[in-house]
Amino acid sequence: MKSDWIDLGPLSEFPAEAPVLRKDDTGRRFACVLRGGEVHALDDRCPHQGYPLSQGALRDGVLTCAWHNWKFELASGACMFGGEPVRRYATRIDGGRVQLNRAVDTAAEVRRLVAGLREAILRDEPARALREGLRLGALGLHRGETGLGSLHLAFEVLARDGAERAEYGFDHGLALLADLCAWVERGRIPAEEAFVVAAHAIGEASARLGPRGKGPGRVGARSPLARIADFELDEPAKVSEALAAERRDEAEARMRELVEIRGTAGARRALMPFVAQHLYDYGHGAIFLSKALELAERFSSAADEVLAASTVQLAWATADTSLPPFTATRAALARLADLPLPGPDGAAEATRPDAAPLEGAERAAFEAEVLAGEQPAVEATVRWLARGAGPLALLGAIGHAAAVRLTRFDSAWEARLDAEVGVLDVTHAVTFAEAAAALGREALPREAAQLAVLAAGFVGKLRKADAAAPHASATATTTRARGGGLLQAVEARDVGAALEIARELDAAGRRRAFAELAPFAAFDAAVRPIFTAHAVKTLEALERLESSDPQPDGAYLAALLTHVVPVRRELSARRIAAVAKKFMSDGRPPDGLY
Image (cartoon, rainbow, N blue to C red; front, side):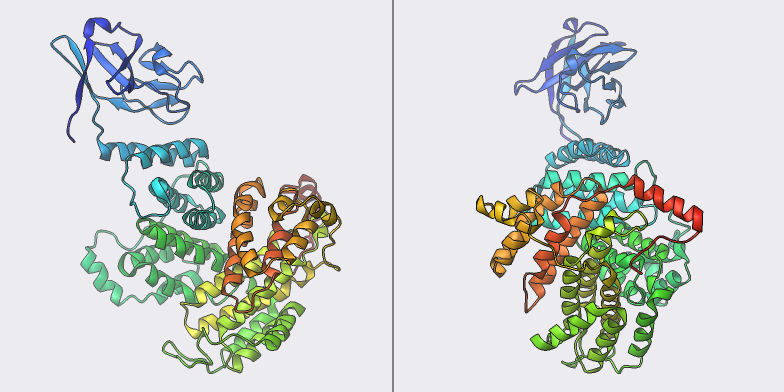
């Protein structure tokens, strides 16, 4: 680091134990205090909101900002009360004059800012986290080509920190981060606002939690060459074996080593056999793995933590399709095992995962069976697979059926006190279908086929959520008469008007609508982070499904509007109390979708 010493004036002009303001030739401000024969110099601008520390009060070596009572230790710049620390500068006295070194030790400054950023996330203080992230970006260390701009490093710290401290593994906050980063890169939302939303979602879920215990691990003190040599004999399949046996520490340790040696692609291959076996945690197993892979590709230095967190989530997950309600899905998977699907090198046009889509009438008939219930859904899927249909073609149709199912959601469920059903439950069918398609593109043919069966059974199982009649457009005429567009109807929370406007849009108009609605989903649709996460990931999934659909229609946009436009009760104390009292009375679970 090259020094940059400037003169601040004679020592005699610095009163003892009192802050004074000094400026350099560029107008930069320093709060200086003579104490114990040494001049301490801090940035004059308080890191909270920029008020002058030189107008603060000094007591026992602590300088207090007069505006919000933030307190800073002169000797280190550490914040004793408030938030982030303040930058401190080296000084010296030469010939009776005070000199200050303006040069910044970049490495030390990065360490200071990253530590401050991580503490802000730990305390769920998104405003403080953003300030530290912006200071980190101001150092100019980010890659110029990144779509996240100067906040790239801050987003990367957020991904790593969130993954390290996620108590039970990859969660909604990290999934939200993946989609928000994509939206920033596409220019749909500002990076700063996206960072605040993601920091709060991650911070709230893991507030004041330390790093998750990582177990004893397997790496130890072995050299990289020794680890690679051992790994060749230690197949990635053992990750799935450890997960199936609930050996969580072993699974996580193996995943870390796998990422180190074989990267993200190796992690994907190791986890796919396990993820394709069951529907985990209402679809979150596949949904979160898909988002974890996206984050790992975007932030390679955080890939080990992100994919380890995904492995931990799978290790704790409930295998829903092992439960009694999913008898039909289990039977279908068993029949699937007898089908002559190609092996890893199979490339037959009719049976490879990316085979041609179903034709219009065939697809409509297949989707009708998927929507009819779990049993007809999985039986139809296995039947089409036996005929040679590609799993990805079927997953495309299943994704469309999932959008239709979401559009049919009966909001009366959310008013009931004897049930714990909400619209978020049905959004999982959409996001699982999209995640299954994304994972299926890189999967073995049999794994892709299993994912198709799981997705179809899930969509069919949620039939109980359907309303008896479609949504009415009670206020559409009034809104349209005023000349309002789709966004105006959405912001007015007018579902009927929004659906009517959406029905008139062509494919290009729907593409513009998804982009136009992204800020609403991220910033205005909900208050609680988990509801925001679902709004964002559902929009992203529906848009991806429409863009990959060779026969797109308005079902995807209609599903989004059905989900995000209504004002929904995000926390119901009455429902929580009613369900608890009922359980204590009769010992039975609340009513649900299955």
